Length: 412
Image (cartoon, rainbow, N blue to C red; front, side, top):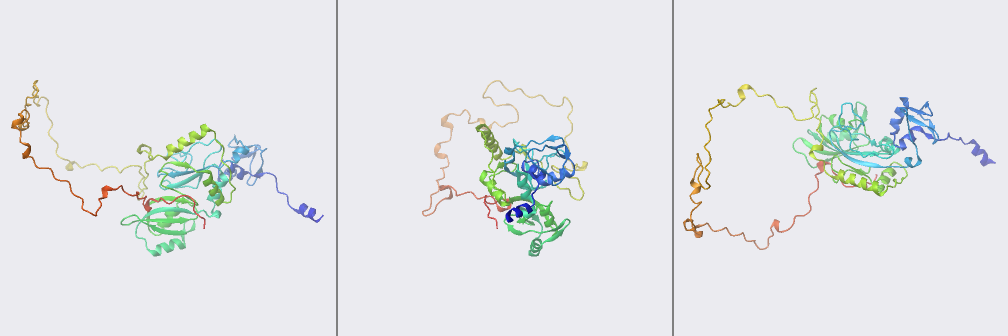
């Protein structure tokens, strides 16, 4: 009887699941995107405008901008993740009114849902960018409460001392609040005033890494993301190419944010071959014709340029004196070439090379008059020449390029 009273006193929650969580899981968008769409009154449930926190089930009809969202149990259990090595010159939006290339242009089209970018990189930042069809996974990876660290390789211009490093690790106040690096280590590479560093942040705020270095009076000349949580960017993924993560890698990434593993969809032989062809194509380096022109940052309110700086026009006095114009009919006619072969051509050419052309064998210099050939160098005993043996392993990429070892970081 007592147990029955306790069960009766328990509050029974409403049926269904939150709307933003359902739409995020099927890949419509992240939770933040869906919440913004609900606030903008773009989403309706059963013909009525949706509200924040509203719960839905499989029997409810959901529309976004008048389009009905198809929901199936199989579609809600798909979790795919893609790694992309972003080049500079691409923006992290689906559509750009200025017509600039976006990171979604090279993504393969999924059968169900759509790709959601996990975080953003500005137009001049390169490196690791991930996409997923699971909005809940994207939301957790981006949320600060899950503490997914992000590592960047950065090249700064200017003198860096120990006091600056300590200030950046202790924290500085930016326009949108305090920020800091949890770790900073100098990397080999760079010359003069250019120095490479690896730094780690725990959030993905807009241009946070650049603003932190700029707060110390330094200029960031290059910035590349090399790690996101347990995912490392390896040298086997060329810039401008993507690779789909394996089931094992997706499970590790999901476990980092407390999600249970979800099996990837089964593909038939035709779909599997197509995906393998796309991955092989994506593993090739980007050709020169495919590269995006780098957008340079303007200096002192100057307009941004996407190509080389135009040359200044020459001053009239700096030009070389040109040859006088030739009047028609001044050029002398050419002497016709003789028809017989072996005769020396007329003109200013020297005919000294024709002296031995038809000379008999007896008129030619004797073989003994030639200079003797230089003997081959003898090897000294006990020494090995470098060319006698094959070279050893090739050196890896310098640390300044931002390449780090593979997958499988242990979370501290």
